[in-house]
Length: 125
Image (tube, rainbow, N blue to C red; front, side):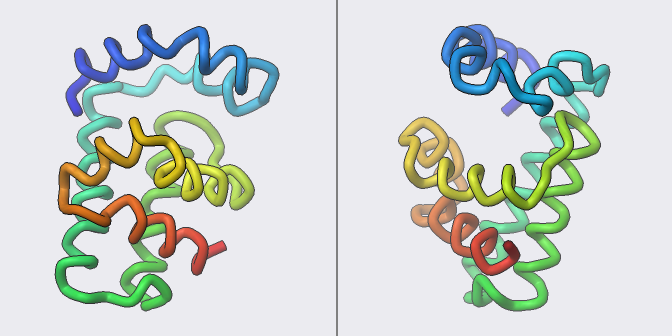
């Protein structure tokens, strides 16, 4: 997902995001964050592709490699969007499979990638 695509999604779902998370510190932090969005999205894409590669190679969700990849995801979110606590990370893992929009986008890298990431996050947390 590139910067302009991210901006389109962000604008499309801005009201929903404000309603669901507008009163949280993470939301305020993300709004104030001055990260280079193109670079941040590129890094996030790399992290997601890393999960897909682990899945293709048969890595268990609780393997050292998968746990390290979850830590990369957490750091990517923290450094570029908002502080990603384990509580937030766990909620993201659930959302990746519960929300069809996330699932569809993540599964572009391979069917079941969203579920795999969710399992990796559960093992990490």
